[in-house]
Every structure is written in C-alpha cells, then in structure tokens.
Image 1 (cartoon, one colour):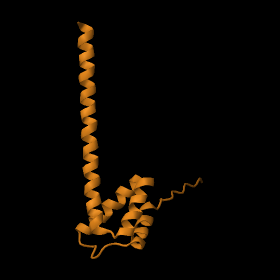
Image 2: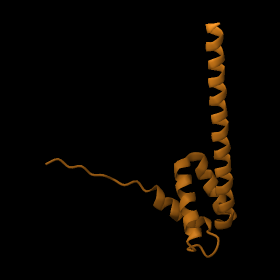
Image 3: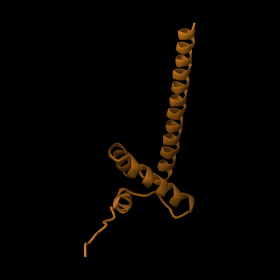
Image 4: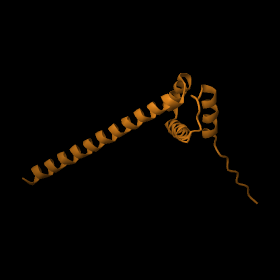
Length: 105
C-alpha cells in the first residue's frame, strides 16, 4: 500500500507541475497578444515586421524595445506611427553594449 501512496503522490505532483506550466504558457500568450496589439498602434507594417524578426533572433532586445515603445506611446511622445528607420535607430540605441575598460597600474 505504501508504494501505491508514493505512486499517487508522484502522479499528483506531475499534474500540479503540468497545470503550472500550462498556466505560465497561457500568461506568455496573453502577454504576446497585448504586445502585438500595442505594436499595431505604434509601428507601421514594415517596422512591425522588423521587430518581429528581432524577436526571432533576440527576445531580450525585442521585449526591451517593445517596453520602450509602449512607454513612449503611453506618455504621448509618439504622435504618429513609427517607421522602420526610426525603429532601427531605437534598436541600435537599445542594443549598444557598454564597454568596460580595465587598466592595470
């Protein structure tokens, strides 16, 4: 009987883990849909396509850029849809790596 209890406990743990993963996946999908809706308001079609290509290569830069664009939109700093060239400049600014120089004395 003890083995049956252990087996049942393990099954319950796996079910819980699966439910948590499914919930997390659903949250990610909802977030992606919200970002997609916001990008349709802020970016023109070419810029959106470029940003989605960035998402395929560098998710961190994609989310950082989307967050910046949403902030600019919410604060009223975006008067018209952003084009591809403006997006390129923003991507360059956000992707710049800071160099740290260490010198020995």
